[in-house]
Length: 238
Image (cartoon, helix red, strand yellow):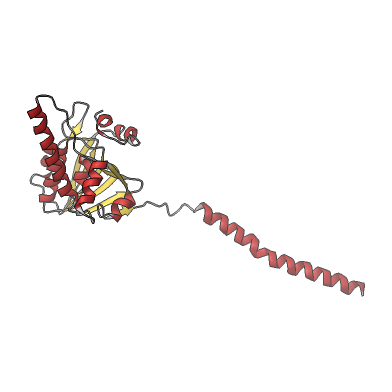
């Protein structure tokens, strides 16, 4: 997989590389739901989702709401930017659910959301664009200039949401920064965190405290009962 060579931080690589490709869409009434899992853009390493795939779904689509379920370690930056723009141009309300990772090019797609929801345990990652090059000094310099321009374009996209200064987002990009769900919300990169709780499942700490409270409530009764027994014995003896 390409990610191992492109990411500085190896902590999350195994999880990202295990994301299986899935691309599907379903339209019901005024709502379209799109699932994008795995590599973004054309890939030599396996199945992937391209900007053309998304364009095919959005073409002549008159849905009022489009939901994108996203779990991807990224891929081709230009495909990510193209998908971002396709979603932004659509008249529908765009809701993006990050189901696992929105890393690299996938984080660009996430920025198209009118409402970006980070589900429990999810992460968002932004970093510098990268590529392979070969040739003369002039050709290498041209590639460098192109990468610098692309990084600037990525910063433009993140700044549509980021609450801080441009210099800060540029440093985050340079550092390859991973944001937890709550961090992404705090910085404005996401709108909300969706934490799933099983309402039928009792909290273990609460269960323990309830049992302790029941036993502790019996202590005064024991003291009263013991006092009464002593008084009754004293009366009998007298």
